[in-house]
Length: 203
Image (tube, rainbow, N blue to C red):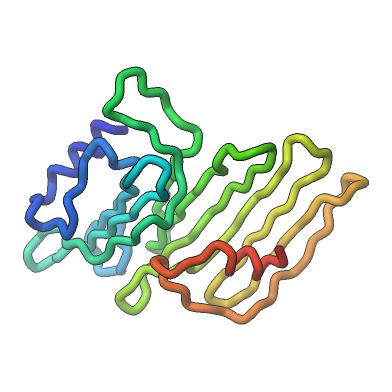
């Protein structure tokens, strides 16, 4: 994976980047047609400082001049584990974000839970290009506590419409399902606050 990302990094000239990128800090990347113009675009997650959230760099292909044009850097919105790739003895982390291209041109960001205490919350964001900006179109989470029995909950909803579903395990082991129905919002990815989306889910 790292060799593929390094190859990607050298495809566009350094002068075209709005900020320098150290290639060893590229965690993951995805290509696809984000804006529906028939050209292949690029998004990548890049580590910043040890212990800090990561940046996301977005590039849209300029079809006229045939290069990947940097259009947005979303700073410190993605949590993940600092891996120190330049140190000997690197081992793969299980808390690295994952990107997937969806058929409709949106990008799925899977954010695995950080290992803090016994509770874990895996999150998924759906990011879409709308009216010249990347926005949060969907949100989902799965929460559990491995030290407690039946301590599980989940939610998935469309941020633009405010509609979705949530569930929560009950003490007897049954699952209670609820409908999420809040006011729809258009939230720029750079302005996204996870507290807003968790509140919509009833947490």
